[in-house]
Length: 485
Ligand code: ADP
Image (cartoon, protein in one colour):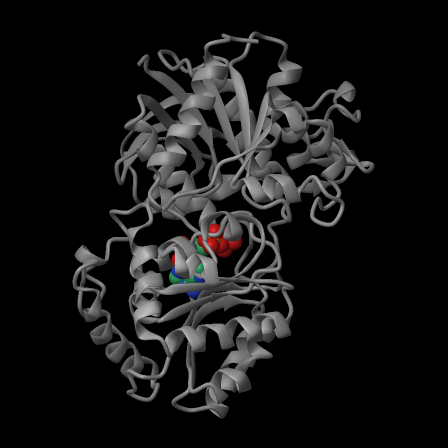
C-alpha cells in the first residue's frame, strides 16, 4: 500500500480547539487514516488556544502581508497531531471563540480570517513549502471552501481536492464587493465559480470547484439534494451527484472508552455494564435528581439550538414526569432555551435538572449514566452523540433523519425478534413524534431483558473510525492515482 499525503484544512480540531463535532472529526480522522497508510497534515488557524498548545514549531512559510498583517506558517506537533499552524496575530490572536467574539456576534472580518486560511492552504498545496507535496487537499466546511477557488484560479498544476460538508446550514456568504479584496479575479464571479445568489459563497465555491464532495452520512447526502434540506444548494448538489458521497463519522474509541474512562464514578466494560447503576446514582446526586434506579433516566448532551429540536424536549417534560422518568440536560446555546431549562429544573426538582455550559467530563458522565439519550434533531448530518451513547450503553432515542437513521437500528418488533435493535427512531420530528418515542422507551424499560439487549447491541456496534477511515482512504487513493490536474 503506497503512502499518500493529505493536506487537511479545518477551522477547529480536537483536542486543541472545539465548538462541535467538526473538531472531533478533524482530530480523530487524521489518526485513523495513519493506520490506512495516509499521512495527514492539518492546517489550522493559530488561535490562542492552539498557539499555547503547540511545541517545537518551525516556520515554513513567511508572508509579510496576509490581508493586512504579517503571518507565518509553523510546522508543529501537538497532542499527536501533525500540523501547519497559521500564525497571523491580526486575524486570530484575540479572546472569544473561533467564529464569534465574546459578545456572541460573528467576527466582522471572518471572510478575511478564513480566506487567509484557504489562501495559505492553496500555497501549501502548490508546493511552496519545500518537502511538502500533498497528493490530496481535503477541506472541511465553508471555512475551507475558498481553497479550491484559489487553486482553480491560480492555474498551476494542483493536487486533487475534496471538500466535506459537516453542516450545510453554515455557508459563509459575503458581499460581492469583497471579490477583489479577497484576492479573487473577476472571472471567479460566475455560476461555476464563487458567485452565489449575487454574493460570494465560500461553501458554494468549494462545492463547485472541488473534484469530489463528501458528507458525513449517506442519508444526509440524499437529503441535501432535495429542496427541503438543500438550503439553497440542492440544485448544485444534484448537478454534482456523480461527485457526491456520504461516509458516516466514527468516534475516537480511545477517548470514548467506558472501561478506561477516568471521568466516570465507576468505569465498566460490556460484561460489567450493570455497573452503570453506580454512575447513574452518582449523576443523580450531582444533578440533584431523586436517587431512584427504577426511574428511566433520559440524558441530553447537545448544543441548544433549533436544529437539535431542543424545544421538542421542553414540550415533553410533563410526559417524562408522567411516565416516571428523569431528565438530565447538559448543553449551551440559545439564551431562550438555556433559560427554559433553568426554569424547568426549578419547577420540577428531583425530576429535571440542567447544567448549562460546555463540559467534556460531564458529557462522559451523562453517557455512562443515562438509560436513554434524547436526540430529536430536525436535521442531523451525522451526529456523534448517538455513537457515544451506543458505545456507553445509553439507548439513543433519535429523530429519523440524516446520519441518525444511518447509524441507529430502530428496535421495532422485528428488530427485537432478530435481536438487532440499537435504539429508537421516530418521525415525524414533532413534539408528538418525540412523545410517542418516549412512551416506547418506557415500555421497553418495563421489559428489562429487552432493554438490556438493545443496550448490549449498541455497545457491541463498531462505532470507531476504522471503517470510515478505510472509505476515505479508498477515495483519496483513487483520486491521487490520477495525478495532478
Ligand atoms: P454538532 O457538531 O452539530 O454540535 P455532533 O453530535 O456532531 O453535533 O457533535 C457534538 C459533539 O460535541 C459531541 O462530541 C458532544 O459530546 C459534544 N458536546 C455537545 N454539547 C456539549 C456540552 N455542552 N458539553 C460537552 N460536550 C458537548
